[in-house]
Image (cartoon, rainbow, N blue to C red; front, side, top):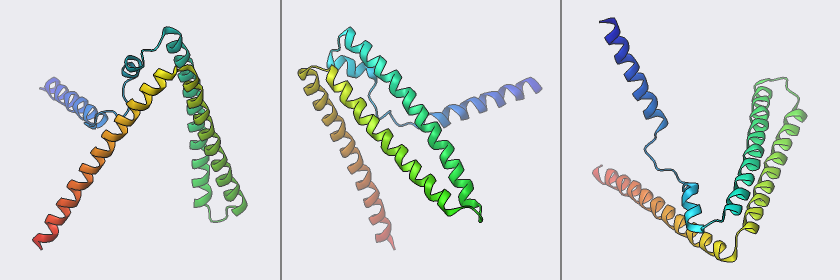
Length: 158
């Protein structure tokens, strides 16, 4: 009996964890393989992109670690009634500079990727991105429209 209870508990926990990690929404980013198929990347281009991806991932992780530390420090300073106002302002300025540097690096990374692609591949990429953006805008419109109609229906009931 005890083994059966433990088994049910394990099943319940595993189902709960799976549900927590799967929000039911498809990923907004297309899989890398789809982009490779659409662009017909050469093996050299794929190797170059993998190298870019690794470098960018390392930079992103370092940025996130730094920002996390600064947010924690800022939160502690804000909670402290005796905190130095200049230190808070300096930390906020430092966080802004870090965000700006990170955005500049992302733009630079994008430009480096574009240099590897041929003009035909760039054209395919732009068409693919515009299709994805159109689809996202339509989804946003329909979600917003449903929400507005539901709100109006509730208002008419009163």
